[in-house]
Length: 381
Image 1 (cartoon, rainbow, N blue to C red):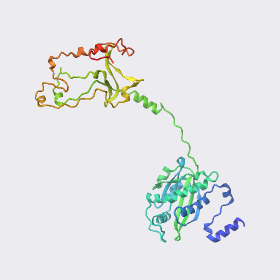
Image 2: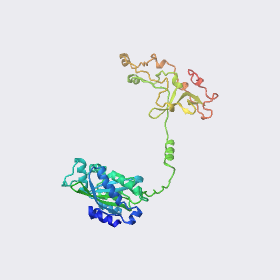
Image 3: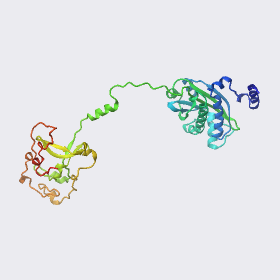
Image 4: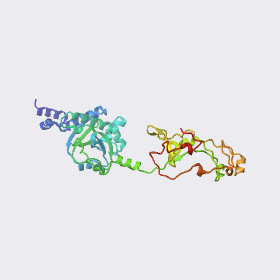
């Protein structure tokens, strides 16, 4: 029996409009997706939606970007189709088809009369993704078996498109593979049209190479940060004093300081961030700090948040009435009161600073640095 005889018998059984046999050229090329889409649409409605559906018509189109803009209207439900390599397509449900599918999905039944039209929302699109995604997957798998038809592979439903003016801003220019399907659902025969369009090319155009201007950004940032000025403070010791005691301080008063403060000096960055630790001494007549560290790693960087040992502040002392009544006396915790005028204290003699050029090579050599002579109470460590 010839193909014409088969075609005639099928037309008599199901009607002229429901049968469209491919011609020899379409079968030989294998690039016309009408027949694959028609078959997969009926299967998707039946298997994934549990509803009997008939594809009355499936047209293959070749729209351009300006044609896609005309498909998007306020009454229809338009959604983007997201593919691999940044590809994007478009799917548009007619209000009659969308409302019929939503009624069946939400109520489990399909009435003979269509409900009153209403605006379609992104929530409706999320429900209809149960039909769009399986249809795109089935269609892509069917077309992948044909040579040169990978343009249909890898799509799924994306965001909604509410304004037709957004179409040329979102979708790429060029030609598209377009299809318009007419579906009839259930015994009532309700339904409508579904429009699908995917780009003809299966990969986007390669990006234009950028011209390098100046040094790379990471190198420029590194140079800028490392070249910034940073102020460091050398901190020998910290303590806490009540406000009343601080208010009674006057020139010549002495604050007792532990001997370990000279051997455990901290270099701090703004915010009291410890950068390094060392000991106080002199070199070539200049006050200097010898930084401690092992294998070239500064001690402060190993534990920047920790205070140097022995520098913990004493607990705040309690004030008696006598402290508040006699402002001329200074009493510190752990030290006896003293008379500042009777104490022979010469700051210039205790910390002599001689002028001279600082030599980094001999800064802390045993010949040039005499820590014991500079600080008699400090034993060399």
